[in-house]
Image (cartoon, rainbow, N blue to C red):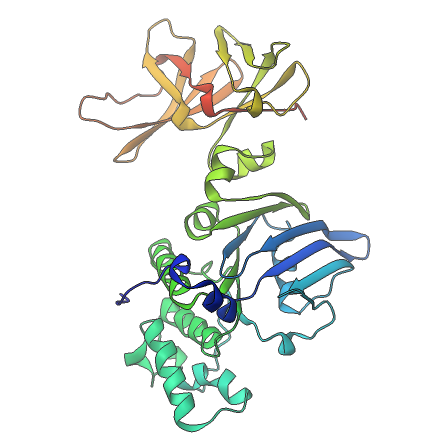
Length: 372
């Protein structure tokens, strides 16, 4: 475990953050490979010292965007600006960014210290200055005692720490990470997620982190950019994305969501639904209705679906899973399925497949989207 005071980015004076980190602007960027459009008119701004995750399914364009910021790809149109300077045509080696990939790309014949020192040697540093900077970087990732080992003598998590130290040793203003934890097991991945967040608070560098893992993005980043089909779907805080998804895709991709067909009142503030013998009439905040039609798709999170045993209930329990502190239950009403998640208490009974239940929906935090 790493020790010492973990400095919050918000604790670092503004001038100091400016020296350590770089702001990035992506302005109307598109990237095409022949007829295939990998990115389509993407615009976003990353503030200095911010931790931003690029999140999306395979083929969404997230890694393409990162590779363009790094300098390994060039935009077909649009502009990339770092600290306000256009860098579209600047080669990667002149940008001076730290880059960490899922494949660690360590030199197998070099020790840990030699791998970490390599970027400094490439920049003309020698002697005690290199030794001091390498020691700081290895201490930052808690690998000081392993400095003389070869990569083959390290675990996967230790190798990833070496790759991270190598990317940080020359104090880059921007650290780019392309699914760096994807090859690790769940427990180690969660441990390194926390450690990377701690390192971010210490160094103050801007971090752009690519992942397909929703939980990873929400738990690590200050803001998350959700991409799909080469387009930016939403860019906001983890809480904004979970509680107020801007589209049905984001609602479905972030967390767990059930969708129900509903009919809206003319004012758009009341929904009506009839699914088999389940009738729903609920009010919903008008700002959470994103369709002008009188029909739509209600998106509701499982924690807002409550169940009650009833022999004459309109819904049937399809499956249930006990997860210690919570119980997750899948119910079926006609041809619609709903997911419910509730906190377990000593007096709460477990649901079982085949039971009939009443369903109560809390639509305060639900969303209504157009029917596609």
